[in-house]
Length: 164
Image (cartoon, rainbow, N blue to C red; front, side):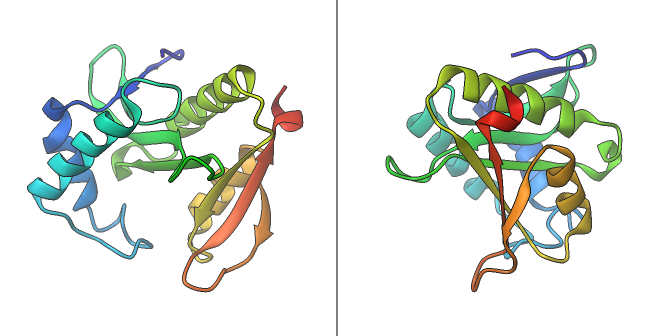
């Protein structure tokens, strides 16, 4: 998938160094339970995504600047199991924050997902103190449903009727 500035595509094993960098950036992972990962973990993650999602609509994708092929971050809509709700997940390298890349990618993926499915909601989870992520979700038509769920973060929901 291409947007105005980005290519959004499934991860391949050639992206393992970028995923390693992303998974080990302290600022990116400030609010996550894990703030580091081994290269083997990154390789296993990519192999798992390839096996579970292939190149389908549900996936964890690499965002890269189309003109330069420079990786920006990851974004995807995925389900943890067959009966799970769709979840939007995203992380970006700090040098790309505030440039609208994540909003551009999220909008494209959300519209594609709602257009192609009968699903009516997508949820996202973020740490209740992660104000940048909360602002991002609110700017993408997500509404907070649960504030600081035990052992998880705050849960935000967006609906098909908000987008289409």
